[in-house]
Length: 336
Image 1: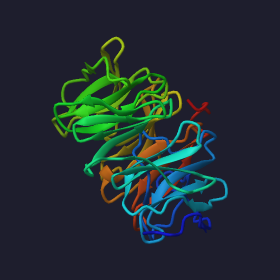
Image 2: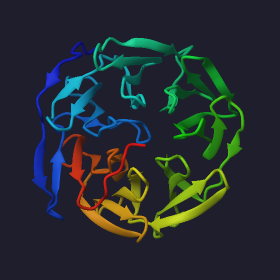
Image 3: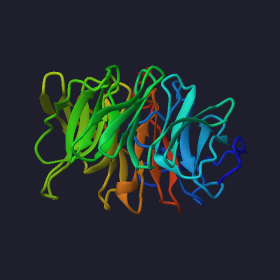
Image 4: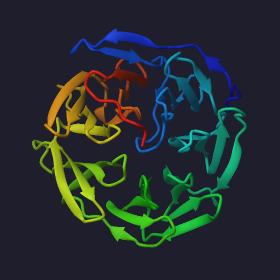
């Protein structure tokens, strides 16, 4: 177990000109050890976009760090024995960090860094689909049931027929999305109003709520590998589904603050790029190479102000975080 909570690491920033576009790219972490992002739907930037949380093996174990995006200083926040790197997030008010250490849901504040046990899964089941709702409650799946942990009430809100592997709180709505046996379902956070969503027939790839919560954005993957992957959006309120744009074979994507621009990581080995896609014109602009050994491992996120993109790649060694400023191409937005 790591015992270095609160230890500060000096900046590891390294700026370089991208070989393909000559745009500035900043490598945020040292590729001598692995670092990465949490699940893309979870809150990992502070409201002001001046800091973020990420995981790293800097001290030999996987722990969560707070990164000041101005100074480059990283501070270790956890001493977890079995950190789930896809299940940690900041609370909506930036005050708390929630994470799973094995079967135990814990929280810390940036001030005290003393972990507090919030919930322990009975029988040590594998918890999946972690999410934090707008009201600060934490939801996740324990096998076939979805559990809500909140100040007012803690307990299961759904007993599904099969294993649930994705749970995402719907922004600005008391609802959440969950995935069971490949199907997407919407449910109120009190356990009522279960509704199945009807995305385009075929394979549904990564899915994310739009920042305002009105639509579900997702990648549609055709059965024919020669056909282009498309970005679509589904409106649960009126049961409509429409095309946003074809993509350069996106393996992962992220919307900016108002879903007018999308960042994407191409899965094409010949064009292993980070790309931005403009919704209104359906035009793409190449930002930089990601050159990851496996494009499926490239995670990409927009900062809340839409002025930079952070992605993960192992192009220089082990997985590391990279940042691309995009203020020249994308208008600033307010945090949703």
